[in-house]
Length: 75
Image 1: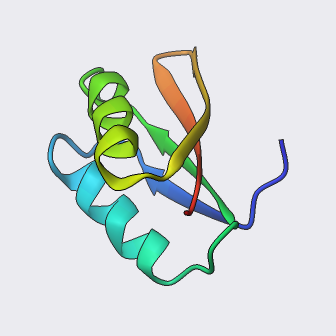
Image 2: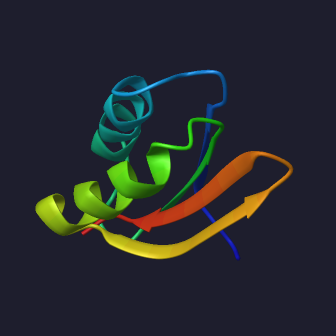
C-alpha cells in the first residue's frame, strides 16, 4: 500500500504511539496516508478506537514478527 509518511512507534507503549500518530497526522493534509509501525500489542485496540473517535480511516492493520503495521488515512 502506498503512503505519504511513516511513523516508527516501535518500543513505545500506550499512550505514546497514539500521541505520536496525532502529531504526525496534524502535519499532514486531508486524504494523505500515514503508515505506523508499532510493537505494543495494545496498539491493535488503540488504533481501532482512535480511528472510530477521530474519523480517520483505518485502511489496514497487519502483524508480522511481533510488529504491528497500521495504515491511517487522514480525514
